[in-house]
Image (cartoon, rainbow, N blue to C red):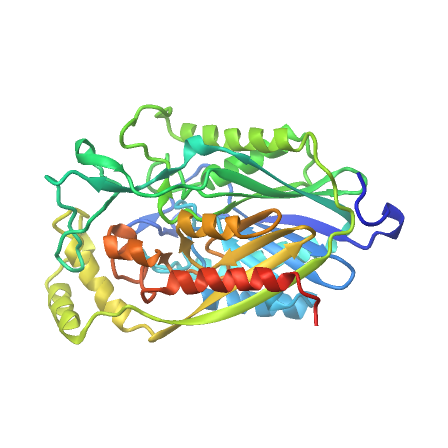
Length: 463
């Protein structure tokens, strides 16, 4: 079904491309408390780009198979893309899938950034955008969604009064426990709602050949592999399966982006045997289930041949939650007495790990720039937020947005976890003050309201 205009008057074009970014063996892998090294490549990693042009404005959505991408790293890439393509930096959304089995370009806990990979990756991301732009051709889009609730679980739990979750930063007890391994018998219940929806933007040429699908699901990652493995996790499994389901050719680029999954994962602590236990079996099952749901939704959709594009982008300044002078001196003493080179992560060593985080956090600038972005593509909107966003935040924005909508997390930056203020008060891993959880209290509300403001402004006439 045509919408707004006929094919003959069409101006909308789209192109997609992917570039292999698989790191060499021996590369640092981050995402864990300690460093790992690439020893086995299970499947290739990619930087995937979708470029769209409505005749006036050009935007690009880029999804990268990596754990996190820091803002300064991405700002440099965006500047270079702008110089080569004319795409404004604010019109570029570049996100991390958050696979924990990829090359490292940012230090996380005791995991180091890999300098060689940091030098290599920017050119590959840029190449993906350039190739996608070169493939621009007359196209059409559609939006859709389907519920896949069975694979998303809140990983934050209320526990029995007989169990006291310990906060390694304060030394006091938390009110909740994240990922209660070994104390499953102490669980009362999950504390928060999850977002069960897989949402997608689908793009075809007017010749009906597939160009791309950008899907979004609020599941952290699966991680059913050994340390030292390179894998795109369920994000890649989805991409491969959806291409097969749609019988798309090699030019098709399937993308799965990370949604609002900061407090969500797949580990079912009360029913641990409901998934297959073999390596990659769980991620294959989950990726396949999501691809099947999307495939079914695409059987009966309306296509928009002339979607208009609009963008809003702002950066919000936040102060960091830093240790006090007294806390800093205590942390320095712990660090000076700790053997990080041979550290095994246990409940006893966790305070030592977080003492190092206090020292490194204190050394960061006092202010952080947090990117907030909204892309309007036809009747739908994609929000981009530069951190690990909780499901509650994504659901709230979605419920207040007219028309199709989804949030891509870890977009344009990595500011760490962004817990709502009431979750920050409860404690739990996502709230422990560190380089991965550092924004001032109240940041989540400001970010949420700013994105809603940008979405509202998208419907106003462009200046």
